[in-house]
Amino acid sequence: MITAGRGKYKVWLQHHYIGDDIVFFLGGGQRSHIGGVVIAEPKKKVEAIRLSGHYDDIVLLPIAEAACEKYKKKVVAVGGVHVDNATKQEIDLLVENCKKLVKKI
Image (cartoon, rainbow, N blue to C red; front, side):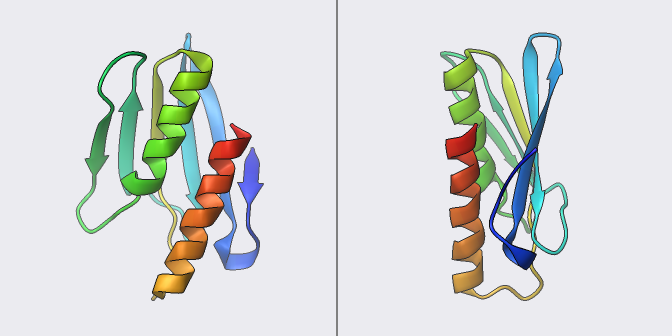
């Protein structure tokens, strides 16, 4: 598992292989959840699903794209991060921490 950030802004990413393919699980903040799913396949258009009321696909998309590009495999990224009553600055911090995870893939 890789992590970025601290306290209620800490996010984490772990992965599991399914055959030759990889599933990445993203969580963190005060409550992890499933807010979106992104599927990346080499040389194909990336597919994203945003669950109602969530915007987690925004941070899942770069995770799936980076892992697909690096490993040349089908990748699914699923999960979400949540901080209660988050301000714009708190959301920006969570997004920045998720970007740090992408660099560690």
